[in-house]
Length: 290
Image (cartoon, rainbow, N blue to C red; front, side, top):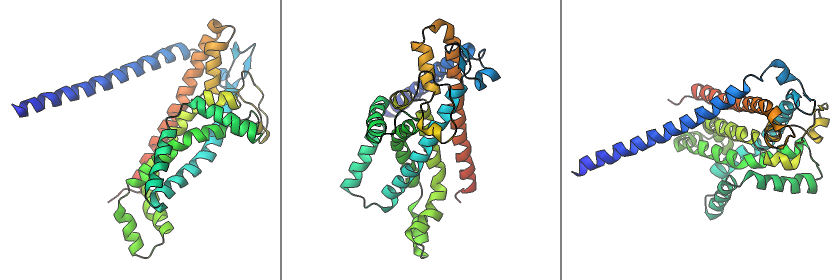
């Protein structure tokens, strides 16, 4: 009787899991179909490469794409090295104790802080205190702070998957601590570290609240040359989508543009996710454990 009851509960559990997964897939498919069906007709070469015209009711989204690219690049340069080095220190060098547990707890709590709080903090720190103004740098650094907890957590979890015997073998042969990490740990942890980091950056690329406070402009079709563009305001795809959907004076007229912008943003994030999968596959194949 006990055995049959266990089988029944097991089947019920698996059925609930399948139904939950199916529900998520159906909802996601409906959202993607809705955006694609209403936005695909807007997508064209001019839409991708031209700037907005006639009060943003015509033209394209090229300045928003460029702004998103530069902000994401600043985010990567700021967040990835700091996040990965922090994870290496916490997992490989730090003496495990109460202080390190508190640091890890703080990092995990920061990953759950609403993005608008990061936006207000970035505005206070980068825009006002450090006098960077409303700019690509301010927004990139703010998104970097938003991404750091994800990068640190993903990198540390990837480092923990490397067996301790890899470290002990290298140390027994006379390698230094850093040589051990560089040759016997990082190659095998890199796929997980990069995958988690890229997924965190993909999430940051779609955030609106942080850049709303730190540099995104309602309408900014100008594309100054590097490096002056780093200190100027910019347009970005998530904020442009927000404007097209809720703030424009002719929302009904620009709704197709909003759907087209959403489709482009989803495509860019999807490309980042595909990149994460390719990088993970490449490194797993290269450093396949025997």
